[in-house]
Length: 127
Image (cartoon, rainbow, N blue to C red; front, side, top):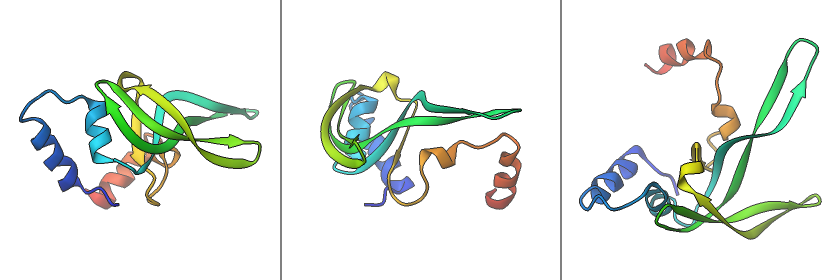
């Protein structure tokens, strides 16, 4: 299911009526039963070359199950040898989440990390 800006904003407006919902509860409601990538700030690999190194962001991937207060619950994907599996329950503190995006075929978190010099190109094209 495609999450639109309107849907995200409408849910914020609805949840702001009581002002009791947490980020985890918002994400759980917005992305219920959908696959997401969650970045918590770690890198899984640091490739070093002669003059520079490249770090690759580590992400959790899984299907949103629900939330309890500040805890987001996902059915996490994991690798068993060379086989991808799903179903490891993972409980993530919303305070640990630095970025989250749906797995929707419109790029992955790694694609969203840009160089500062790319921002002018983006602004010219879409601004």
